[in-house]
Length: 434
Ligand SMILES: Cc1cc2nc3c(=O)[nH]c(=O)nc-3n(C[C@H](O)[C@H](O)[C@H](O)COP(=O)(O)OP(=O)(O)OC[C@H]3O[C@@H](n4cnc5c(N)ncnc54)[C@H](O)[C@@H]3O)c2cc1C
Image 1 (tube, rainbow, N blue to C red):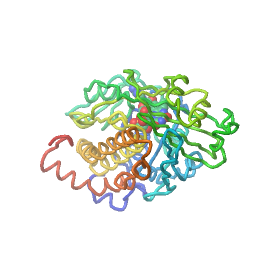
Image 2 (cartoon, protein in one colour):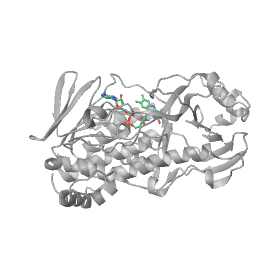
Image 3 (cartoon, rainbow, N blue to C red):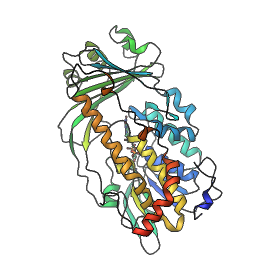
Image 4 (cartoon, rainbow, N blue to C red):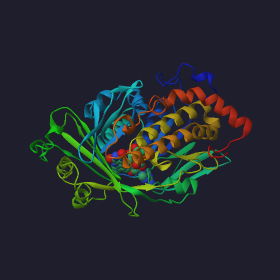
């Protein structure tokens, strides 16, 4: 398919495209970015292959958040009924200062800006998306070790070498996460990370098995209705939530940490260090933290924004965390938006204009992602600098309309023609160029 009139009526991908576009998309990595890209490519008639490093699907991680801007795709894919029961349904964020005085009660509407938010266990939610991709016929190959990426000018091909086998297509997407190899192999950028000065202790555990319901200080977390509590102190904030009718608990504590090591979803935290941070705080904090049988010490590593996400020949790109790592909150949502938008630009450009599709994709996505990244840092700093006397909306978690009401798929359909025209008339400029 080539040309825009062909896609009229397909609109938000709610109707299957009439035929295959003939575009072969290779996606490296089956995290939220890779899966969203694969699902949407399949829906829009592209031929998609996913290559994943892990050899077996495991339920890993703890809590992850999808805002309504990503929730609308969960609903479009028909996955609401599977995700909703495993997600948290706290109606308010009850925010306290470190002494335990309530400083704000922020309503968290279940349905906002036309869609739900989905906050749940990363591994459980990931498994549902993974199985959905397989069920609609996405070819996902596990145990793949990609050692090379390549593209050619002459025949307009791109490909990878995986486990010694050469696989080629029209476009290759590196969606291989925060410690991306694709970033270097596709773009030539070394991973120049540095400590952000912060880390997060994080835990997820069963409430009853770990005695939360028997401790009078924190039994309020296990009444059968999910709740979300927060405590903020100088340079530290703690968020705790119950899930699945308050049978599971998760907490995240962001704190100062200058250790210069990389991120790992398996690096263990020491409980004595965790508890030392809340000495003199509301005693509910230590009671809650100490119930976790183990926790992860996730270093928040900083990387300067990449000047571009696409290769010179514009047949290869990085997306999701590989392109733009996030502080907690919007990482998975933006990764999903990336994948959705790429499927649209490929559909509208057509097989003969794949490089144009990638350039349009980067143009559409870059500044929005940057704005969302900056918002995460501003919220953290606002909480860490709050005074114990601060009250009210000034300490709310921001829920801005520009971020959450956004429909990345509809927007891409809307702006594509103009973006393509600009690129054709003025040549391609990376979004960071003045
Ligand atoms: C095991 C794990 C646990 C996580 N737990 C949490 C959590 O609890 N909370 C949270 O907020 N975020 C968590 N994240 C990160 C979160 O999923 C991402 O920040 C966000 O969803 C963006 O997704 P992504 O697809 O860009 O990256 P990721 O979700 O990191 O996915 C990247 C995928 O690429 C695969 N991969 C990496 N290298 C290669 C390679 N060379 N070849 C092929 N495949 C490769 C990885 O195995 C992974 O499946 C976790 C990520 C992982 C991998």
